Length: 539
Image (spheres, rainbow, N blue to C red):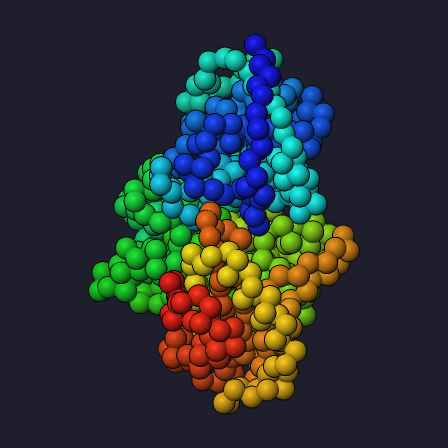
Protein backbone atom coordinates (compact mmCIF):
# COMPACT_ATOMS: atom_id res chain seq x y z
CA UNK A 1 0.00 0.00 0.00
CA UNK A 2 3.05 2.28 0.21
CA UNK A 3 4.17 4.02 -2.96
CA UNK A 4 7.47 5.77 -3.59
CA UNK A 5 6.88 8.63 -6.01
CA UNK A 6 9.62 10.38 -7.99
CA UNK A 7 9.62 14.17 -7.72
CA UNK A 8 11.68 17.26 -8.51
CA UNK A 9 12.50 20.08 -6.07
CA UNK A 10 10.82 23.44 -5.75
CA UNK A 11 13.19 26.26 -4.83
CA UNK A 12 10.74 28.42 -2.86
CA UNK A 13 10.04 26.28 0.22
CA UNK A 14 12.07 28.24 2.76
CA UNK A 15 10.04 28.86 5.89
CA UNK A 16 9.39 32.34 7.26
CA UNK A 17 9.00 33.30 10.92
CA UNK A 18 5.96 31.04 11.36
CA UNK A 19 6.19 28.24 8.81
CA UNK A 20 5.67 28.01 5.07
CA UNK A 21 3.16 30.41 3.49
CA UNK A 22 2.37 30.54 -0.20
CA UNK A 23 -0.48 31.43 -2.48
CA UNK A 24 -3.05 28.62 -2.60
CA UNK A 25 -2.44 28.05 -6.29
CA UNK A 26 1.27 27.61 -5.66
CA UNK A 27 0.59 25.06 -2.92
CA UNK A 28 -1.76 23.21 -5.29
CA UNK A 29 1.05 22.52 -7.77
CA UNK A 30 1.89 18.82 -8.28
CA UNK A 31 3.87 17.42 -5.33
CA UNK A 32 4.30 20.83 -3.67
CA UNK A 33 2.87 19.83 -0.29
CA UNK A 34 4.33 16.34 -0.66
CA UNK A 35 7.85 17.66 -1.21
CA UNK A 36 7.68 19.93 1.81
CA UNK A 37 6.30 17.29 4.16
CA UNK A 38 8.74 14.61 2.98
CA UNK A 39 11.59 17.04 3.62
CA UNK A 40 10.38 17.49 7.20
CA UNK A 41 10.13 13.73 7.68
CA UNK A 42 13.62 13.23 6.23
CA UNK A 43 15.12 15.78 8.62
CA UNK A 44 13.38 14.24 11.64
CA UNK A 45 14.68 10.77 10.78
CA UNK A 46 13.28 7.75 12.62
CA UNK A 47 9.52 8.27 13.03
CA UNK A 48 8.55 4.87 14.40
CA UNK A 49 8.04 6.08 17.97
CA UNK A 50 6.72 9.57 17.11
CA UNK A 51 3.23 11.01 17.66
CA UNK A 52 2.18 14.26 15.96
CA UNK A 53 -0.82 16.56 16.00
CA UNK A 54 -2.55 17.48 12.74
CA UNK A 55 -5.23 20.08 12.02
CA UNK A 56 -5.81 23.55 10.67
CA UNK A 57 -7.94 26.66 10.43
CA UNK A 58 -10.26 25.28 7.74
CA UNK A 59 -9.04 27.51 4.94
CA UNK A 60 -9.16 26.52 1.26
CA UNK A 61 -7.11 23.44 0.33
CA UNK A 62 -6.71 22.34 3.97
CA UNK A 63 -9.00 19.36 3.52
CA UNK A 64 -6.98 18.12 0.54
CA UNK A 65 -3.58 18.75 2.15
CA UNK A 66 -4.59 17.07 5.41
CA UNK A 67 -5.44 13.85 3.56
CA UNK A 68 -2.06 13.99 1.80
CA UNK A 69 -0.27 14.42 5.13
CA UNK A 70 -2.17 11.55 6.74
CA UNK A 71 -1.19 9.19 3.91
CA UNK A 72 2.42 10.37 3.91
CA UNK A 73 2.67 10.07 7.70
CA UNK A 74 1.56 6.44 7.50
CA UNK A 75 3.94 5.67 4.64
CA UNK A 76 6.87 7.21 6.53
CA UNK A 77 6.23 5.06 9.59
CA UNK A 78 4.83 7.59 12.07
CA UNK A 79 3.44 5.78 15.11
CA UNK A 80 0.34 7.95 15.66
CA UNK A 81 -1.49 11.06 14.47
CA UNK A 82 -3.83 13.04 16.73
CA UNK A 83 -6.23 14.92 14.44
CA UNK A 84 -8.77 17.64 15.21
CA UNK A 85 -12.34 16.68 14.33
CA UNK A 86 -13.13 17.62 10.71
CA UNK A 87 -9.50 18.70 10.41
CA UNK A 88 -9.99 21.77 12.64
CA UNK A 89 -7.76 23.04 15.42
CA UNK A 90 -6.59 26.52 16.39
CA UNK A 91 -2.89 27.23 16.77
CA UNK A 92 -3.07 27.90 20.54
CA UNK A 93 -5.28 24.86 21.15
CA UNK A 94 -2.81 22.77 19.16
CA UNK A 95 0.11 24.00 21.25
CA UNK A 96 -1.79 23.05 24.40
CA UNK A 97 -2.50 19.53 23.12
CA UNK A 98 1.16 18.98 22.20
CA UNK A 99 2.31 20.10 25.66
CA UNK A 100 -0.43 18.36 27.64
CA UNK A 101 -0.03 15.00 25.90
CA UNK A 102 3.75 15.25 25.43
CA UNK A 103 3.54 14.78 21.67
CA UNK A 104 6.60 15.02 19.45
CA UNK A 105 5.23 18.02 17.55
CA UNK A 106 2.46 19.01 15.21
CA UNK A 107 1.42 20.31 11.81
CA UNK A 108 -1.07 23.18 11.82
CA UNK A 109 -2.30 24.09 8.35
CA UNK A 110 -2.78 27.84 8.41
CA UNK A 111 -1.52 31.06 6.89
CA UNK A 112 -2.60 32.77 10.11
CA UNK A 113 -4.05 36.23 9.41
CA UNK A 114 -3.61 36.05 5.61
CA UNK A 115 -6.71 35.84 3.35
CA UNK A 116 -8.02 32.44 2.29
CA UNK A 117 -9.69 30.97 -0.78
CA UNK A 118 -8.37 29.75 -4.11
CA UNK A 119 -6.82 33.17 -4.76
CA UNK A 120 -5.75 33.55 -1.14
CA UNK A 121 -2.99 32.00 0.92
CA UNK A 122 -2.14 28.56 2.25
CA UNK A 123 0.33 27.62 4.97
CA UNK A 124 1.84 24.87 7.08
CA UNK A 125 3.25 25.46 10.57
CA UNK A 126 5.55 22.79 11.96
CA UNK A 127 5.73 22.83 15.77
CA UNK A 128 8.20 20.84 17.84
CA UNK A 129 7.66 19.07 21.17
CA UNK A 130 7.40 22.41 23.00
CA UNK A 131 4.22 23.21 21.09
CA UNK A 132 6.01 26.20 19.61
CA UNK A 133 7.83 27.14 16.43
CA UNK A 134 10.91 25.19 15.44
CA UNK A 135 14.29 26.97 15.70
CA UNK A 136 15.97 28.41 12.62
CA UNK A 137 18.63 25.69 12.72
CA UNK A 138 15.93 23.08 12.02
CA UNK A 139 14.01 25.10 9.42
CA UNK A 140 17.29 25.70 7.57
CA UNK A 141 17.91 21.96 7.38
CA UNK A 142 14.39 21.40 6.05
CA UNK A 143 14.91 24.04 3.38
CA UNK A 144 18.15 22.42 2.25
CA UNK A 145 16.33 19.10 2.02
CA UNK A 146 13.62 20.64 -0.19
CA UNK A 147 16.31 21.69 -2.68
CA UNK A 148 17.54 18.15 -3.25
CA UNK A 149 14.49 15.95 -2.70
CA UNK A 150 14.01 13.24 -5.32
CA UNK A 151 11.12 11.15 -4.01
CA UNK A 152 8.41 10.94 -1.39
CA UNK A 153 6.44 8.13 0.24
CA UNK A 154 2.66 7.97 0.39
CA UNK A 155 0.08 5.37 1.33
CA UNK A 156 -2.21 4.37 -1.54
CA UNK A 157 -5.53 4.22 0.32
CA UNK A 158 -8.93 5.86 0.68
CA UNK A 159 -9.29 9.24 2.36
CA UNK A 160 -9.94 9.22 6.10
CA UNK A 161 -13.34 10.24 7.51
CA UNK A 162 -12.53 12.94 10.08
CA UNK A 163 -16.10 13.66 11.18
CA UNK A 164 -16.37 11.24 14.12
CA UNK A 165 -14.43 11.12 17.40
CA UNK A 166 -12.70 7.74 17.38
CA UNK A 167 -9.39 5.86 17.48
CA UNK A 168 -8.46 3.41 14.73
CA UNK A 169 -5.62 2.02 12.62
CA UNK A 170 -4.95 3.30 9.11
CA UNK A 171 -2.21 1.88 6.89
CA UNK A 172 -0.50 0.55 10.00
CA UNK A 173 -0.62 3.93 11.79
CA UNK A 174 -2.82 4.76 14.77
CA UNK A 175 -5.16 7.74 14.34
CA UNK A 176 -7.09 9.45 17.13
CA UNK A 177 -9.70 12.03 16.14
CA UNK A 178 -10.28 14.45 19.02
CA UNK A 179 -12.60 17.28 20.00
CA UNK A 180 -10.42 20.33 19.18
CA UNK A 181 -12.26 22.57 21.69
CA UNK A 182 -12.50 20.47 24.89
CA UNK A 183 -8.91 20.53 26.20
CA UNK A 184 -8.50 24.22 25.42
CA UNK A 185 -11.66 25.16 27.34
CA UNK A 186 -10.46 23.18 30.35
CA UNK A 187 -7.13 25.04 30.28
CA UNK A 188 -8.81 28.45 30.18
CA UNK A 189 -10.99 27.49 33.15
CA UNK A 190 -7.83 26.74 35.15
CA UNK A 191 -6.29 30.12 34.34
CA UNK A 192 -9.12 32.64 34.74
CA UNK A 193 -11.86 33.41 37.25
CA UNK A 194 -14.80 32.17 35.19
CA UNK A 195 -17.20 32.67 38.12
CA UNK A 196 -16.42 36.40 38.34
CA UNK A 197 -16.69 36.87 34.58
CA UNK A 198 -19.97 34.95 34.50
CA UNK A 199 -21.34 37.13 37.27
CA UNK A 200 -20.38 40.24 35.29
CA UNK A 201 -22.35 39.01 32.27
CA UNK A 202 -25.30 38.13 34.52
CA UNK A 203 -25.42 41.78 35.63
CA UNK A 204 -25.89 42.95 32.03
CA UNK A 205 -22.35 43.33 30.72
CA UNK A 206 -22.27 43.04 26.93
CA UNK A 207 -19.61 42.01 24.44
CA UNK A 208 -19.16 41.51 20.70
CA UNK A 209 -16.61 38.94 19.55
CA UNK A 210 -15.83 38.69 15.83
CA UNK A 211 -14.43 35.27 14.90
CA UNK A 212 -14.00 36.51 11.30
CA UNK A 213 -15.42 33.24 9.86
CA UNK A 214 -12.29 31.52 11.12
CA UNK A 215 -11.32 28.69 13.43
CA UNK A 216 -12.02 30.28 16.84
CA UNK A 217 -15.75 30.59 16.17
CA UNK A 218 -16.62 27.27 17.88
CA UNK A 219 -14.22 28.01 20.75
CA UNK A 220 -15.74 31.46 21.29
CA UNK A 221 -19.36 30.30 21.21
CA UNK A 222 -18.62 27.57 23.75
CA UNK A 223 -16.63 29.81 26.13
CA UNK A 224 -18.34 33.19 25.89
CA UNK A 225 -21.96 32.24 25.24
CA UNK A 226 -22.42 28.70 26.61
CA UNK A 227 -20.15 28.79 29.67
CA UNK A 228 -19.81 32.47 30.65
CA UNK A 229 -23.34 33.46 29.73
CA UNK A 230 -22.83 36.22 27.18
CA UNK A 231 -26.09 36.73 25.33
CA UNK A 232 -26.71 34.62 22.24
CA UNK A 233 -25.36 36.44 19.20
CA UNK A 234 -22.46 38.00 21.12
CA UNK A 235 -20.15 35.94 18.90
CA UNK A 236 -20.49 36.87 15.22
CA UNK A 237 -19.01 35.33 12.07
CA UNK A 238 -18.54 32.13 14.08
CA UNK A 239 -18.80 29.51 11.32
CA UNK A 240 -15.36 28.72 9.82
CA UNK A 241 -15.33 29.11 6.03
CA UNK A 242 -12.71 28.17 3.44
CA UNK A 243 -12.43 31.78 2.23
CA UNK A 244 -13.34 33.33 5.60
CA UNK A 245 -16.52 34.60 3.97
CA UNK A 246 -14.49 37.04 1.91
CA UNK A 247 -13.05 38.64 5.05
CA UNK A 248 -9.34 39.27 5.57
CA UNK A 249 -8.97 37.48 8.94
CA UNK A 250 -6.54 39.96 10.47
CA UNK A 251 -7.91 41.52 13.69
CA UNK A 252 -6.93 45.15 13.28
CA UNK A 253 -8.62 48.49 12.67
CA UNK A 254 -8.41 48.05 8.89
CA UNK A 255 -9.60 44.49 8.31
CA UNK A 256 -11.97 44.04 11.26
CA UNK A 257 -13.98 47.02 10.05
CA UNK A 258 -17.37 45.46 10.80
CA UNK A 259 -16.48 45.12 14.48
CA UNK A 260 -14.79 48.52 14.62
CA UNK A 261 -17.82 50.28 13.12
CA UNK A 262 -20.10 48.55 15.63
CA UNK A 263 -17.91 49.41 18.64
CA UNK A 264 -17.68 53.06 17.55
CA UNK A 265 -21.47 53.35 17.08
CA UNK A 266 -24.33 54.20 19.44
CA UNK A 267 -25.11 50.46 19.66
CA UNK A 268 -21.65 49.52 20.93
CA UNK A 269 -21.22 46.73 23.46
CA UNK A 270 -19.21 47.24 26.64
CA UNK A 271 -16.36 45.20 25.20
CA UNK A 272 -15.27 44.14 21.73
CA UNK A 273 -12.67 41.66 20.50
CA UNK A 274 -11.61 39.69 17.45
CA UNK A 275 -9.27 36.82 16.55
CA UNK A 276 -7.45 36.01 13.33
CA UNK A 277 -7.57 33.00 11.00
CA UNK A 278 -5.91 30.46 13.30
CA UNK A 279 -6.76 32.09 16.62
CA UNK A 280 -3.40 33.35 17.80
CA UNK A 281 -3.93 37.09 17.28
CA UNK A 282 -6.35 39.40 19.09
CA UNK A 283 -7.79 42.90 18.98
CA UNK A 284 -9.29 44.63 22.04
CA UNK A 285 -11.88 47.42 21.93
CA UNK A 286 -14.02 49.36 24.38
CA UNK A 287 -16.90 51.68 23.56
CA UNK A 288 -15.47 54.00 20.89
CA UNK A 289 -12.02 53.04 22.14
CA UNK A 290 -9.17 50.97 20.66
CA UNK A 291 -6.39 49.39 22.74
CA UNK A 292 -3.14 48.98 20.83
CA UNK A 293 -1.41 45.60 21.20
CA UNK A 294 1.52 47.47 22.77
CA UNK A 295 -0.66 48.94 25.50
CA UNK A 296 -2.55 45.67 25.92
CA UNK A 297 0.65 43.75 26.70
CA UNK A 298 1.67 46.41 29.21
CA UNK A 299 -1.76 46.48 30.88
CA UNK A 300 -2.01 42.69 31.15
CA UNK A 301 1.47 42.57 32.68
CA UNK A 302 0.59 45.32 35.15
CA UNK A 303 -2.54 43.42 36.27
CA UNK A 304 -1.23 39.86 36.47
CA UNK A 305 -2.14 39.62 40.15
CA UNK A 306 -5.86 39.78 39.27
CA UNK A 307 -5.67 36.43 37.46
CA UNK A 308 -5.83 33.25 39.61
CA UNK A 309 -3.23 31.38 37.53
CA UNK A 310 -0.61 34.13 38.04
CA UNK A 311 -1.47 35.31 41.56
CA UNK A 312 1.81 33.98 42.98
CA UNK A 313 3.84 36.16 40.62
CA UNK A 314 5.38 36.04 37.16
CA UNK A 315 8.98 35.58 36.06
CA UNK A 316 9.14 38.40 33.55
CA UNK A 317 7.96 39.71 30.21
CA UNK A 318 9.37 39.97 26.69
CA UNK A 319 8.43 41.92 23.59
CA UNK A 320 9.59 42.02 20.00
CA UNK A 321 11.98 44.82 19.08
CA UNK A 322 9.30 46.47 16.93
CA UNK A 323 6.81 46.56 19.81
CA UNK A 324 6.64 49.80 21.81
CA UNK A 325 8.53 50.27 25.06
CA UNK A 326 5.32 50.53 27.14
CA UNK A 327 5.80 47.14 28.79
CA UNK A 328 9.42 47.93 29.65
CA UNK A 329 8.24 50.63 32.04
CA UNK A 330 5.85 48.15 33.69
CA UNK A 331 8.58 45.53 34.06
CA UNK A 332 10.84 48.04 35.80
CA UNK A 333 8.04 49.08 38.17
CA UNK A 334 7.34 45.46 39.15
CA UNK A 335 11.04 44.55 39.25
CA UNK A 336 10.59 41.55 36.95
CA UNK A 337 12.69 40.26 34.07
CA UNK A 338 12.48 42.12 30.76
CA UNK A 339 13.69 41.01 27.31
CA UNK A 340 13.56 42.43 23.80
CA UNK A 341 13.71 39.82 21.01
CA UNK A 342 13.51 39.68 17.20
CA UNK A 343 10.12 39.31 15.53
CA UNK A 344 9.00 35.68 15.61
CA UNK A 345 7.36 33.77 18.44
CA UNK A 346 10.10 31.14 18.49
CA UNK A 347 12.40 33.65 20.22
CA UNK A 348 10.06 33.72 23.22
CA UNK A 349 10.05 29.93 23.66
CA UNK A 350 13.60 29.67 25.05
CA UNK A 351 12.78 32.41 27.55
CA UNK A 352 9.60 30.64 28.65
CA UNK A 353 11.19 27.20 28.89
CA UNK A 354 14.05 28.59 31.00
CA UNK A 355 11.58 30.38 33.31
CA UNK A 356 12.84 33.83 32.40
CA UNK A 357 9.45 35.14 31.28
CA UNK A 358 5.75 34.39 31.79
CA UNK A 359 4.18 36.95 29.42
CA UNK A 360 5.20 38.04 25.93
CA UNK A 361 3.79 39.91 22.97
CA UNK A 362 4.24 41.55 19.61
CA UNK A 363 2.84 44.74 18.10
CA UNK A 364 1.19 42.64 15.38
CA UNK A 365 -1.73 41.80 17.67
CA UNK A 366 -0.13 38.74 19.27
CA UNK A 367 -0.10 38.26 23.05
CA UNK A 368 0.53 35.16 25.14
CA UNK A 369 2.04 33.51 28.18
CA UNK A 370 3.87 30.37 29.19
CA UNK A 371 0.64 28.37 29.55
CA UNK A 372 1.42 27.32 25.94
CA UNK A 373 4.19 28.11 23.46
CA UNK A 374 2.21 30.16 20.95
CA UNK A 375 0.41 33.48 21.07
CA UNK A 376 -3.18 33.01 22.18
CA UNK A 377 -6.08 35.19 21.05
CA UNK A 378 -8.89 33.93 23.28
CA UNK A 379 -6.52 33.88 26.29
CA UNK A 380 -5.93 37.62 25.79
CA UNK A 381 -9.68 38.28 25.51
CA UNK A 382 -10.39 36.33 28.71
CA UNK A 383 -7.56 38.18 30.48
CA UNK A 384 -9.24 41.47 29.66
CA UNK A 385 -12.66 40.18 30.73
CA UNK A 386 -11.13 39.04 34.03
CA UNK A 387 -9.62 42.50 34.63
CA UNK A 388 -12.95 44.16 33.81
CA UNK A 389 -14.78 41.82 36.20
CA UNK A 390 -12.24 42.34 39.00
CA UNK A 391 -12.09 46.14 38.76
CA UNK A 392 -15.56 47.11 37.60
CA UNK A 393 -13.95 49.66 35.29
CA UNK A 394 -14.36 50.17 31.55
CA UNK A 395 -11.73 49.42 28.91
CA UNK A 396 -11.13 53.14 28.43
CA UNK A 397 -10.79 53.81 32.17
CA UNK A 398 -8.27 50.99 32.63
CA UNK A 399 -6.19 52.18 29.67
CA UNK A 400 -6.19 55.91 30.44
CA UNK A 401 -5.33 55.25 34.09
CA UNK A 402 -2.42 53.13 32.88
CA UNK A 403 -1.16 56.01 30.71
CA UNK A 404 -1.45 58.44 33.58
CA UNK A 405 0.64 56.13 35.72
CA UNK A 406 3.34 55.12 33.22
CA UNK A 407 3.17 57.66 30.38
CA UNK A 408 2.02 56.84 26.86
CA UNK A 409 3.83 55.46 23.83
CA UNK A 410 1.90 56.81 20.83
CA UNK A 411 2.37 54.11 18.23
CA UNK A 412 1.55 53.63 14.55
CA UNK A 413 2.77 51.03 12.02
CA UNK A 414 3.11 51.86 8.33
CA UNK A 415 3.15 48.95 5.87
CA UNK A 416 4.48 49.46 2.36
CA UNK A 417 3.28 46.30 0.61
CA UNK A 418 4.12 44.53 -2.64
CA UNK A 419 7.59 46.05 -2.95
CA UNK A 420 9.92 44.23 -5.35
CA UNK A 421 12.20 42.09 -3.18
CA UNK A 422 15.42 43.40 -4.74
CA UNK A 423 14.31 47.00 -4.14
CA UNK A 424 13.36 46.30 -0.54
CA UNK A 425 16.61 44.46 0.19
CA UNK A 426 18.74 47.28 -1.23
CA UNK A 427 16.76 49.92 0.66
CA UNK A 428 17.41 48.12 3.95
CA UNK A 429 21.08 47.50 3.16
CA UNK A 430 21.71 51.14 2.24
CA UNK A 431 19.81 52.33 5.30
CA UNK A 432 21.91 50.13 7.57
CA UNK A 433 25.07 51.67 6.12
CA UNK A 434 23.64 55.14 6.73
CA UNK A 435 22.73 54.58 10.40
CA UNK A 436 26.12 55.49 11.94
CA UNK A 437 25.96 58.93 10.29
CA UNK A 438 22.69 59.69 12.10
CA UNK A 439 23.99 59.46 15.66
CA UNK A 440 23.72 62.84 17.37
CA UNK A 441 21.85 64.36 14.41
CA UNK A 442 18.79 66.55 15.00
CA UNK A 443 15.54 66.43 13.02
CA UNK A 444 13.61 69.39 14.32
CA UNK A 445 12.72 68.67 17.96
CA UNK A 446 14.04 65.10 17.73
CA UNK A 447 17.71 64.30 18.36
CA UNK A 448 19.07 60.86 17.52
CA UNK A 449 20.47 59.11 20.58
CA UNK A 450 21.48 55.87 18.83
CA UNK A 451 20.89 54.47 15.35
CA UNK A 452 21.90 50.83 14.82
CA UNK A 453 20.70 47.41 13.70
CA UNK A 454 18.84 45.42 16.32
CA UNK A 455 21.00 42.50 17.42
CA UNK A 456 19.70 39.84 19.83
CA UNK A 457 21.95 37.55 21.84
CA UNK A 458 19.86 34.63 23.10
CA UNK A 459 20.70 34.12 26.80
CA UNK A 460 19.69 30.44 26.61
CA UNK A 461 21.26 28.95 23.48
CA UNK A 462 23.88 31.63 22.81
CA UNK A 463 22.70 32.32 19.26
CA UNK A 464 22.85 35.80 17.72
CA UNK A 465 20.13 37.22 15.46
CA UNK A 466 20.00 40.54 13.62
CA UNK A 467 16.46 41.71 12.89
CA UNK A 468 15.52 45.22 11.84
CA UNK A 469 17.01 48.69 12.15
CA UNK A 470 16.25 51.08 15.02
CA UNK A 471 16.64 54.85 15.38
CA UNK A 472 16.30 55.87 19.05
CA UNK A 473 15.77 59.49 20.04
CA UNK A 474 16.77 61.19 23.27
CA UNK A 475 13.14 61.70 24.38
CA UNK A 476 12.36 57.96 24.27
CA UNK A 477 10.79 58.01 20.81
CA UNK A 478 11.82 55.45 18.17
CA UNK A 479 11.63 54.53 14.48
CA UNK A 480 11.98 50.83 13.61
CA UNK A 481 12.37 49.46 10.07
CA UNK A 482 11.85 45.79 9.23
CA UNK A 483 11.07 43.56 6.26
CA UNK A 484 8.08 41.34 6.97
CA UNK A 485 8.42 37.57 6.82
CA UNK A 486 4.69 36.73 6.93
CA UNK A 487 3.60 37.53 3.39
CA UNK A 488 3.17 35.06 0.54
CA UNK A 489 4.50 37.23 -2.29
CA UNK A 490 6.69 40.29 -2.74
CA UNK A 491 8.15 42.19 0.20
CA UNK A 492 6.56 44.40 2.84
CA UNK A 493 8.59 47.22 4.35
CA UNK A 494 7.28 47.91 7.82
CA UNK A 495 7.99 51.18 9.58
CA UNK A 496 7.10 51.40 13.27
CA UNK A 497 6.73 54.85 14.82
CA UNK A 498 6.74 55.38 18.58
CA UNK A 499 6.54 58.75 20.31
CA UNK A 500 6.71 58.78 24.10
CA UNK A 501 4.97 61.34 26.30
CA UNK A 502 5.10 61.23 30.09
CA UNK A 503 2.15 63.58 30.72
CA UNK A 504 0.40 64.50 27.47
CA UNK A 505 -1.51 61.19 27.08
CA UNK A 506 -4.84 62.04 25.40
CA UNK A 507 -3.77 63.25 21.95
CA UNK A 508 -4.51 61.65 18.57
CA UNK A 509 -1.83 59.02 17.77
CA UNK A 510 -1.52 59.80 14.06
CA UNK A 511 -1.02 63.50 14.80
CA UNK A 512 1.58 62.75 17.45
CA UNK A 513 3.69 60.47 15.25
CA UNK A 514 3.36 62.56 12.06
CA UNK A 515 6.75 64.29 12.55
CA UNK A 516 8.39 60.88 13.02
CA UNK A 517 6.72 59.61 9.85
CA UNK A 518 8.27 62.44 7.85
CA UNK A 519 11.70 61.64 9.31
CA UNK A 520 11.27 57.90 8.63
CA UNK A 521 10.38 58.36 4.95
CA UNK A 522 13.15 60.91 4.42
CA UNK A 523 15.92 58.88 6.06
CA UNK A 524 15.06 55.63 4.25
CA UNK A 525 14.20 57.35 0.94
CA UNK A 526 11.04 55.25 0.70
CA UNK A 527 9.14 57.41 -1.84
CA UNK A 528 12.13 57.71 -4.16
CA UNK A 529 13.00 54.02 -4.03
CA UNK A 530 9.55 52.40 -4.00
CA UNK A 531 7.34 54.99 -5.70
CA UNK A 532 5.08 54.89 -2.63
CA UNK A 533 4.40 58.27 -1.04
CA UNK A 534 2.08 56.85 1.60
CA UNK A 535 1.64 53.51 3.33
CA UNK A 536 -0.67 50.85 1.92
CA UNK A 537 -1.85 49.91 5.42
CA UNK A 538 -1.71 51.98 8.59
CA UNK A 539 -2.37 50.19 11.89
